[in-house]
Amino acid sequence: MRNLILISVLLLTGCATAIPVKMGFPQLPEALTKPCDRLLPLDPAKKQLTDLLENTVDNYAKAKECYAKNQAWQEWYDTQRKIFEEVK
Amino acid sequence: MWLLHFIPDSLIVYVINMTVLAGIAITVAGTFMGFIPVVNKYKTILHLIGIASLVLGIYCKGVFSTDAAMREQVRALEAKIAVAEQKAKEVNTQVQTKIITKIVKIQDKSNTAKETLRRNKDTINAECKLTDEAISAYNFSITKTPATPPAETK
Figure 1 (tube, each protein chain N blue to C red):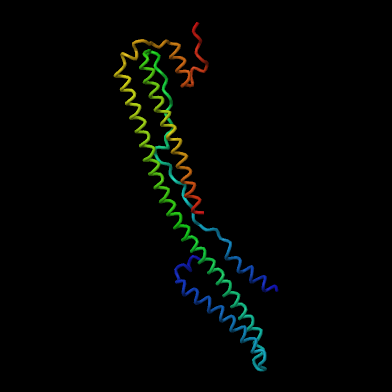
Figure 2: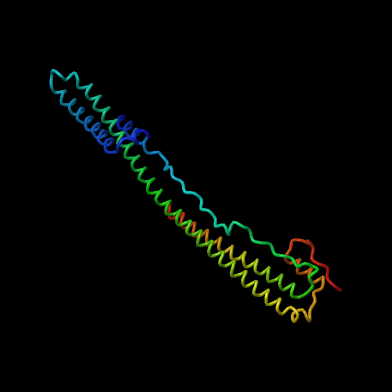
């Protein structure tokens, strides 16, 4: 019986090893590494309605870009998570 | 252990199997030797050698099969990771292209709107001029400063 236990213990010593493989964290696309642009205030010297409208158009464009970046971030994250989970 | 990686697997398996078989053979021979009067005094020694060889052989077999299984797992995992990394790169390219296309479209639209405003500048500005309060209220909504809302006009 003692011999059997000894043999079992000896055989088990070869089993406790972790697999030495690691997966690197995926790189973020360059376009998503930059933060969203801040909205621009209107120059107080510009008092015409078209100045305000131009500024508003610029700011809308910045907000839309930010929204698009946010959507891209979510898409990137969801896809990368799926890829990562496939490896497990 | 890493030195074993330089020896062909088939040779290692052969040596291990021979050790196990030799262990069994020596143990069995020792048992039969116990029945022969002249040589039965060697029974214990043969048993010891046989069992030691058997234990060593089985231990090595366990280690080798575990090592082989792990190497196989590592190979499979490395292949999976290579595929995943390739997919991740493709996704990055797709996301990058998509976002750049969107940004270009947004900027084009913004430029078209601004051009229209510039073309119709005189008509648009004819009936309206912004007051300081209007500009201040507008800027208050999109900037951090001023911290307090603009004063109301009386």
